[in-house]
Image 1 (cartoon, helix red, strand yellow):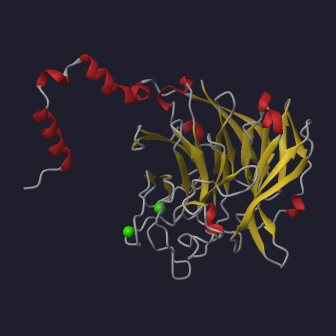
Image 2 (cartoon, rainbow, N blue to C red):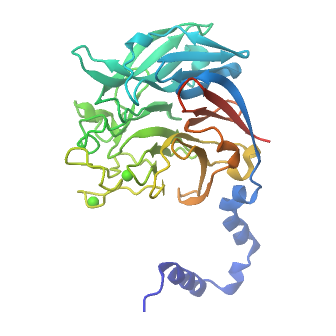
Image 3 (cartoon, protein in one colour):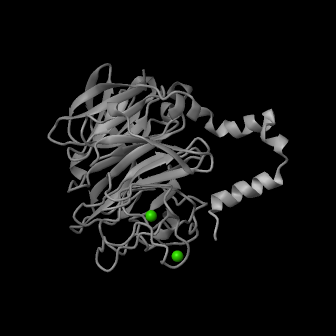
Amino acid sequence: MRLPRSLLVVLAVSLAMPVASVTDPARAAHRAQPQAAERKPVPKLKVTTVVGNLDHPWDVKSLPGGTLIFTQRDRATLSVFKHGKVKKVSFPSSSVWVSGETGLMGLEVDPDFKRNHRIYTCQGGFTGNGGHDVHVTAWTLDKKLRTATLAKELVGGFPTSSGRHGGCRLIVTSDGSLLVGTGDAAEGTNPEDLDSLGGKTLRLDRFTGAPWPSNPYAGSSGPRAYVHTYGHRNVQGVTERADGSLWSIEQGTYRDDEVNKLVNGGDYGYNPVPGYNESVPMTDPSLPGKQLKARWRSGDPTVATSGGTFFNGAKWGALNGAMAVACLKASRVLFLTFDAKGKLKKVRAPKALRQYGRIRTVSTSRNGDLLVTTDNGGGNDVILRVSPS
Ligand SMILES: [Ca+2]
Ligand SMILES: [Ca+2]
């Protein structure tokens, strides 16, 4: 007879330890620590609509002083919300290629914004020979937030097809790199091809656009110098945990949306060939080398995960340190709690966020609230502010 592994561990531990140590108060306190947040109550959520009459608001970030800045994908507009009013930022919308799932997408604010007024966007573009790409651009905003001026094209040439699976999410990490999540453009060879920038997470210097020095192929002269992780499908969420670990959120096929903890150089195992064969697993261990398993997956059917973020603050009680994940198809926000090692402990889907239709992304506000965008189209989309009540 084979005993379950968990039972064997319990047996081994109880044999190895004197009985007294189980009730040792110091040891008990130490053991309880990882569950400290979990033991606090789950707060009721207060949800308020901040901005309305939007169309596919794809990303929203918070600027110093309480101003919000956001993109709309198909309108290809950049806007600020300040003193209760929406104002369009002068932005070259006609240079954005809008098609299907691609348009003006990810947005990030430089951590040193007060001094440098820099922001970053990810969008579809025209390559000049009738072709298209998705690329990442740095902009400088003027003091009154009226105009975005091109600072630098940082990295581009991400593959495209119809506009399907265009990615593309951005964050500046705590060590100053720009982390970019890209889509596979619904072309089967991209995720496992190290010289395609599709189906990857990329890291680069946010000022020079150079590949980040710790990237696994940083010394290469090819596109692979930018690759941080590969074997992804359509990464629409990237986020950093308080412990400095980097995570991604991606959409599955008909099964297995995934949340992944990113390991530098890691292969996340999606290889939909020949053609675009979506019957393959989202993580296929039979590929050469080691494939990293997801930390959370939806199973079958998918919920269509998009953007998301880890969030912190004592006011969040049991949710302090959880990850909020936007779901398009399932029209909700999932709150995922992981332990210190990144093992999934709890999944919650609060009712308060199940009445707004499709949810595109969740980000954090400077005061620790959450900002949520809907994705229903037709000019009725909103930005929500969520706080514990
Ligand atoms: Ca995977
Ligand atoms: Ca393998």
